[in-house]
Length: 252
Image 1 (cartoon, helix red, strand yellow):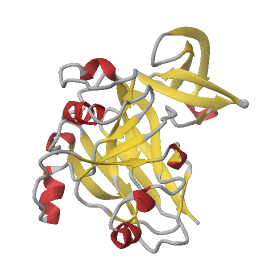
Image 2 (tube, helix red, strand yellow; image 1 turned 60 degrees about the vertical axis):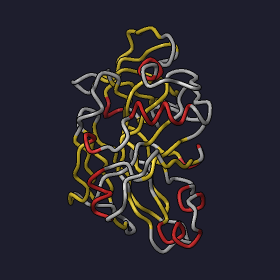
Image 3 (cartoon, rainbow, N blue to C red; image 1 turned 180 degrees about the horizontal axis):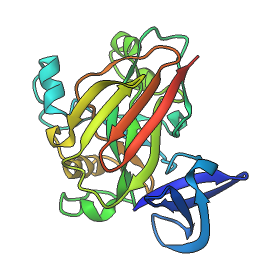
Image 4 (cartoon, rainbow, N blue to C red; image 1 turned 90 degrees about the vertical axis):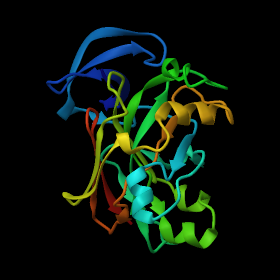
């Protein structure tokens, strides 16, 4: 199923998107229990919002074999993680703001996991029961500031630097999905999640040994090769097989 969060006539609702671009509204919480209603909406007539509202976003650096080869870097022995604040999250069709203090902002297409319930100290075998589903993510980065600072917080944390959505899908195998990024309809990143160094289950188990993951938290699992620089007015599309497309534009 494809879960969405949307606004219609100033009212924010949750729903399930079908193959005919119809949304059936639901009552309750998709992370716990919900009930189907008899309310239907055309996708074209609503505003899609971020499909969840995370308390934090945990990201993984250098997690694709082909990306490591591209950079001529040694493979990490364990996941390298960093955090992005919830204030950086925006939804589909929202604008990514180019910060004045940066002169190089890059895109990074990623598949992200949304947590279903509170998780701490999970074994790899336990992880599946704690996953709500998967969505598209763009780990927007001020690359010049990342290099200047020697650490990643400022470069990753600007408002609008975490585009997320448009749906959460719960019935796919995340381990063999095509992942792509288009810049102004030109293909820039093109890989497959089978290239991951650490599997999604390994990542979640690892992070849960460090911190408690809350329902709705997002884990971004790394980007494939082809990372590049954005310019003002660019249209950036993250496209993941079985999930869909996350489109945003770059503005001042």
